[in-house]
Length: 193
Image (cartoon, rainbow, N blue to C red):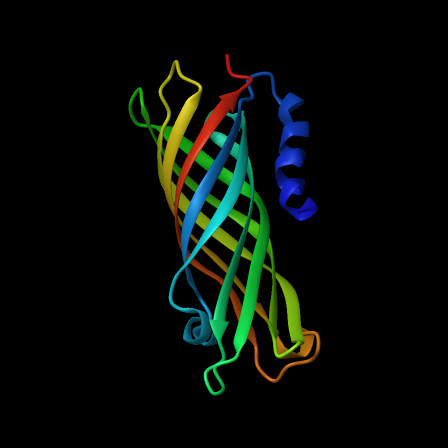
């Protein structure tokens, strides 16, 4: 739980960096299509996951962003049909640009670094790993000029590969983390003019 709070807390502390800064906090529900084919064969092609994000406007439309999310899914092993559980989580930080297209509509594009981790439990055994990766995201935000609440629709991609040699215990194949995600969010603007 502490990992989920690191990026938003860091952004809250960064608010005083610029006199014209504005803080955006949002909660989202994401539809994720996992990147790893082995994950999809056991857990299915889709996972719904919660996500929190924050952005601090630095200057103009340039923002410092951070987000965190976690997905968890139960499945059955292909051969024996025994219960298994997988969890993936990430924390990211990066830059995004907001472009106001109308009094209520903004477009957003961003790029950042992410720390991704996973754990899989089956047959009273577990395997886990973590690796840095990339996060790409773009979307549309409904941000009325005189309102504090906003809504958004984003599409993005998280990507990292954990080599088999870095798994605990050591595995024989690489594990791809992340995947394509589509998010619907609602948030609030703070410290605006």
